[in-house]
Image (tube, rainbow, N blue to C red):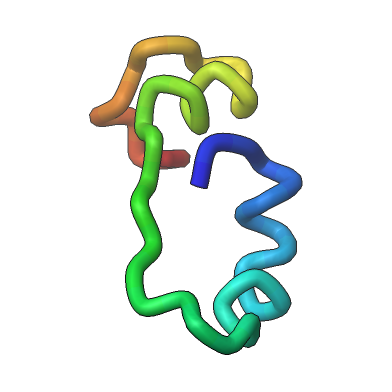
Length: 44
């Protein structure tokens, strides 16, 4: 999970057979949210 786009499609992503784990990339996700590197921000 590294972008807002993937976050908005989380249900579809997790419905794919064979996936057993979801890994969040907090730095990449925060960058896509405009709060680059602020991994403790409440928005994240």
